[in-house]
Amino acid sequence: MLEKKRKKRFLIISLSILFGLAIGAAGFVAYKQYGPQKTENKKITIKPSPSPQTTANPLDGTQVSKDMANRHPLAIIIENHSQARPQVGLDKASIVYEAISEGGITRFMAIYGPQDAQKAGPVRSLRTYFLDWAWEYNAFIAHVGGNIDALDRVSQEKALDLDEFALGDKAYWREPEAGKAIEHTMYTSTEKLYAQAQSKGWDMKGDFTSFKFLKTKDFKINTSIKQEIIIDFSAPQYKVSYTWDSLNNNYPRTLAGAAHKDRNTGNQLAPTNIIIQSVNRTEGLTRINENSWTMQTIGEGKAYILYGGQKFDATWKKTDLKSRTMFYDSSGKEISFLPGQFWYEIVPPDVFDKISIKTESSTPTP
Image (cartoon, rainbow, N blue to C red; front, side, top):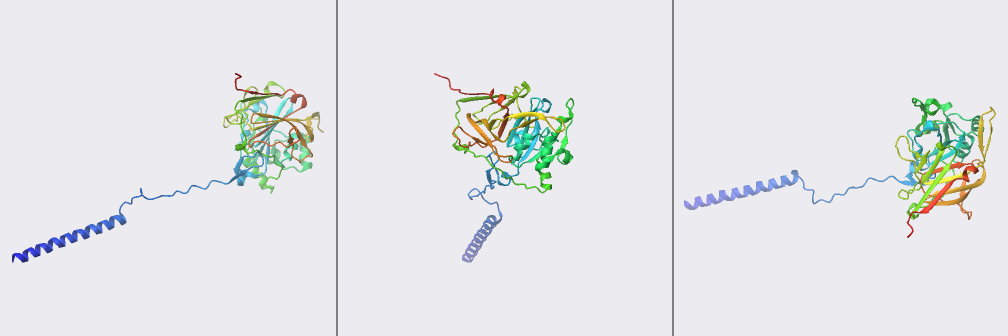
């Protein structure tokens, strides 16, 4: 009887143990399947987002997205009267031309390509020599009217014209300001102008001769060099200077003794390349007796090329209206440029001869 009780107790204990093991095993399986998952020992691979493909754009040689690299150049005439300052949008241009319009007052033609300017201006009227340079890029050209000789040529030459007189508020708007004459208040944007060009069925891809560009990584900067350029166009209000910044490899610009800044960003304008070009000019009257300058943009003449703290004595040559003005060094070799923004300073010979360019070593002499 005692033996039967022992066997019964052993059987009960054994079954209890087996039942407990079974419950534990089931619980472990359930935990592994449905419980928290450990990730610290797992190798997780995060794929980086693909970077946009870039290529050098032909206007200024900088790397931009491929879909914007060869966008058709767009020229906008921007004024430099003292009431027009500070201008907006010049920092987004690949190339800026500066030339005297009349009365010693300079005016700009900003050429845009891969970068958009949400606002550009104040926009002002066209002159024949700006049309000459716009043709070098077959550029769309935006302006507010112009001298009659320039407007005659726009019609005769079938320029890709985006005149405010024709487009009005489709692409332009005024921003009146107290104490400012109304002619200094017209603005536009590259997006609005490109939209109008596209609506006309014009080719949106550029087709022009590009400069040769150096590889920035192969260009050695001499940080011991100091360089200052002073261009006295006429009156003190239009006196321009540049000082080379070796840290950023560009030329911060001053106008009338103060830093020349963009109105929106507050950043000082600072091109990478400066071209100072001597061009003969002649004063005369248009067919409706407007005072007007014409410039001898076809032919050849003297120039200075500046980049990276270096100065080159150069010769410019332009063979016909629609060809690109090219620049050659003293040995007759075509000059290559650094990728970055260009500023052309177009001056008559008498101003060119008085330009001050000082280049010296900033390293103290022992």
